[in-house]
Length: 304
Image (cartoon, rainbow, N blue to C red; front, side, top):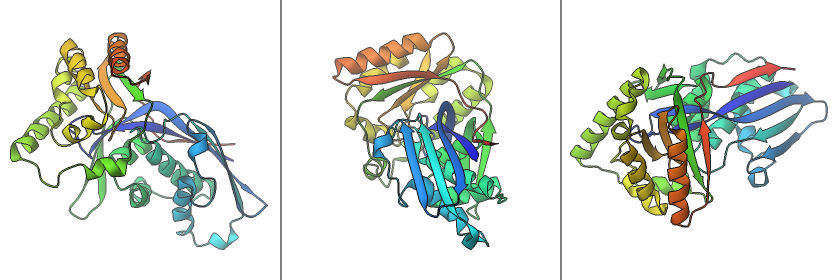
């Protein structure tokens, strides 16, 4: 049996659209074993268990199948039993799809002793996920900057954030479709907005690398995607305004939402949590608030 643990991720972090991501200590756990009986058995427990398909249309299985099709001895494979223990809220902007894809690819690779590099794993994952900002930190952990070379190769840089970093998440009790949130974005943006985001992205990377907490509220500002997505989330503008007003934290949409993510220094997380919960409640939105640390390890595998 192979056990795989994949972290949730928060992406964009405000200005870093489709390139910045951060792994979180919130996990998708898989147990994968080969059985003598042919066929596929998938069982789910935890967050969103009732929402997942348990046949060959399942995303974890589709990810595994990509690896199996690369294997020369695929005809020798027997049946598979997969148990899923999920902690990651589904379709909330916390990388649940990326975790499923990375978990499936890494799990089946280790089960059959296929040697895939990080580059190969990410290329396979990207063919299903479509975006690098979640799959890279899900695989390697930490705070990551993902990009492509001129030859379309996936590359990344990893930064270890301070141990004092706290990630506060406000997870509303409704979902938003990533596909729908993509469609609301413009195909062209003003030059001034692009320059704005370039400056904020650079500032955010520097702030997290050097634990410059005082600039986080400005460093996580954005003009490329959030203005087009926030109208779908009642109360979010007031949440942003109040958190920025404290000067204690930066705040942004997590991925395409509806989860809101705030980055702050240890000791300030209680204030930020209360602002999130109270402000959303006044807007008629119930939400779950979590305070997490960054996951620095990424996907972990063990044999049993």
